[in-house]
Image (cartoon, one colour):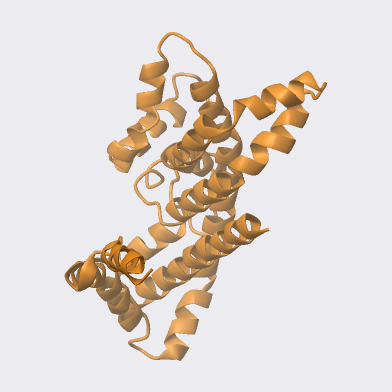
Length: 273
């Protein structure tokens, strides 16, 4: 019995998926250089003039307006892309049509296209000289369109692989029992998509909160109307108020982190239950 137990102990001791201390050290060093040190620098700059100056910077009327506009517009964009992104992912997975590969490839275009180019294109299409007669320049709908453009792939690419893995036999069984299309989607497909939808929505929201290039032209940057937080931060840097810019940046970081962390908790609890 002891001889039989020995190979088991050896197998247990030699099987592992860890990268070891060297890999852990390299990962920690890289994370510190790319993420932690820049965040620490932003926090240091934000509180360089003391907590009182930090509070004054983020509660200034223009700063508050920019933050509120940013959060509200980003939430609207995330909700829109949850619906449209799921629909697009459904079409790409469940339907066959001519040009499907081209459409599938073009979804990732906002990842590669410089966002300032997107703003130029949107300004040409929806600006004062719109070829379709739709002038949205310096309006909040323009902000929604610009942010929806750059955040759509996050939802599509989050939902698409899950749809591919959804059990089609369960759908067929439900249909054979008389369930309608909406019932099948709500009872069978949607629960499977729930974590992916939350993850995609969170990433879309976080990207929209910090977006600058796609809105800088089409949005107009009108204070308290269409000026988003990223534009306010840039404006503060231009007038040599880096501490104020860093303070608003810290608020954006906290908002994004809180949303992503909350969505992760919701996903984890649902998986557990």
